[in-house]
Amino acid sequence: MAELTLIPNLDDADGFYARLLAAHDGLEKSDSDALNARLVFVLANHIGDADVLDQAIKLATLRDA
Amino acid sequence: MNKIFEVPAYAYERSPDQDSVNTVRHKVIVIGAGPIGLATAIDLAQQGVEVVVLDDNDKVSFGSRAICFSQRTLDIADRLGAVRPMVDKGVQWDKGKIYFHNRQIYEFDLQPDTGYAHPAFINLQQYYFEMALVERVRELQANGAPIEIRGRNKVEAIGTHDSHVTLEVVTPEGPYNIEAEWLIACDGASSPTRRMLGLDFEGQVFEDNFLIADVVMEADFPSERLFWFDPPFNRGQSALMQKQPDNVWRIDLQLGWDIDREREKRPENVIPRLKAMLGDDVDFELEWVSIYTFQCRRMERFRQGRVLFAGDSAHQVSPFGALGANSGMQDADNLCWKLKLVIEGKAPELLLDSYSLERAQAADENITKSSQSTSFITPKSEMSRLLRDAVLDLSARHQFARPLVNSGRLSTPCTYHRSSLNSADALNGPEFTRPGSACPDAPLGDEFLLPKLAGKFTLLTIDADAPDRIEEDGVEATRLALSVKDDVTLDLKRRYLGDATSAVYLIRPDQHVAARRDTYEENAFRQAIRRATGKE
Ligand SMILES: Cc1cc2nc3c(=O)[nH]c(=O)nc-3n(C[C@H](O)[C@H](O)[C@H](O)COP(=O)(O)OP(=O)(O)OC[C@H]3O[C@@H](n4cnc5c(N)ncnc54)[C@H](O)[C@@H]3O)c2cc1C
Image 1 (cartoon, rainbow over the protein chains, first blue to last red):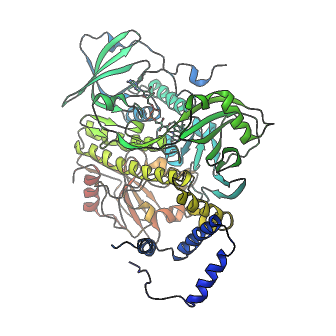
Image 2: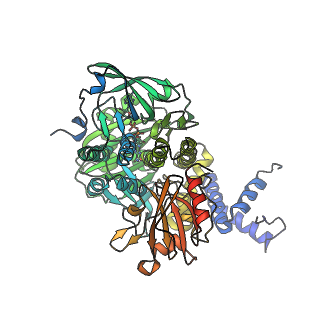
Image 3: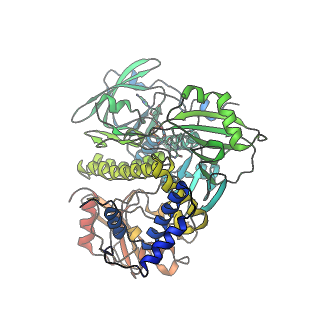
């Protein structure tokens, strides 16, 4: 089973964070929410692997096991 | 002129059974002359099994219900000798368009692949579909096949016994009793048989209403499946439009849960809704309007001793995906050859339990599909709507998001991958012809493969040797020898060999793969026949 990457893996953590915030700049709450939702699907498609995505969903809930 | 569903198709006639001193016992009685009851009866009679169909009505389905019939259904109807009038009359389509708000976001092609005798789907009013089957019954009768339909014969009571079933039937001329060795209940979603036997039918109701309208209009909309998410003419809901024969268009408008159903059904409320959709200047006439709510549920087991359930009596799904009649046709397909072998004493009754297991698996798949479609089409929370709309917005620009769009997953044949009738896969061949799969068609010169696999066990050899026939414990398999040398389109190779250079398939009478390996090995195939008939 493919493993979800849990070690730091971003090329430029601060830069990514800043660009994510910038993408939301000036957006209404609903448009911001929509942007996040679209981003989830874009990234999910890039990953593709169902096992990795399942682990990611689980991890994001912040619930143990 | 009378519509086809207004004229009796199997008018009541007195049967000698009603005057017999002793109760007459038939081999098989089918309750219900809907699509599934008719298909079941034809399948049995074609194989020489005596069958009587009882229906409380005498006409084909009133108004239109199912309109969309799948390739697998057409393949089965072909085996039943009824496909011609369906395909001749039906509207073929393989393209669909998806709209979101006020614009088209993309189009799709259902069957980019070629090499099948029948189209991916046809649209045809259920009454025409049933009529084609009734005509086939008449043709069989003319040829002396043991089949009969009794109109206005309503089953009122059922008694079950170890060796037979007794029925109390009410007719316009009063009641009579008959018996059957086997009873097949194809009596629809509200199955009186199920109720009389006190059997469960558990599931989930979808809290939604759909206005289903068939309108007659001269319009030059293309024969495609048009689906709208949240269109301006039906805010917050969905809509679907499809073409049927005779310039009839099926329109499904989602209405939501809290509505006054009686009010919504009145023409003065329906017509403005349709005008908002079609435009003020389009002239149309209403052929049929109804409001439906839908459920997803199934019986726990489709066999109860000598009573078998098939079609809507056994399982019910929401209409997205045209899963209802299409899956019922596969029930008939799965059941009839098994029942015939059991009746002839060539297979144990246990084989009939595999009918229940295989088709319950199919029903579960359909229920899952149908529930998933519903969640996409009808988001239940703010977040599910947000996610849904995100997918739709992305799909307008990017192909990658389109597989996430779910406007109904159209009916596909079930692969019985867990069935105890399968032998272990012993061929390094394509995934979609592994044991349990419904055989895909392939062109053979001017003909097609599937009709050659119909109604009997077949040993399909592709560049491999095997005897012309083998018999194992009363069950015969006959060989069909093919070679990729004759396979100009390479469809046969693609669908049945993949990377292998030769193959031998054991194919069941319902055209599902029971076993496959690269060469013929007598013991393996004898054992495969035993397994496929419930003897191992
Ligand atoms: C709006 C709508 C759209 C649909 N669209 C599609 C589609 O596009 N594709 C698809 O595949 N499916 C579709 N379906 C589902 C499809 O119509 C059903 O799955 C199909 O009719 C089931 O066939 P059946 O033979 O099992 O039952 P039915 O068609 O319900 O037939 C049951 C028969 O049993 C008879 N009967 C009942 N009780 C008794 C009794 N006591 N004695 C004697 N006879 C009795 C009835 O008279 C009836 O003729 C749709 C359904 C609806 C409502």
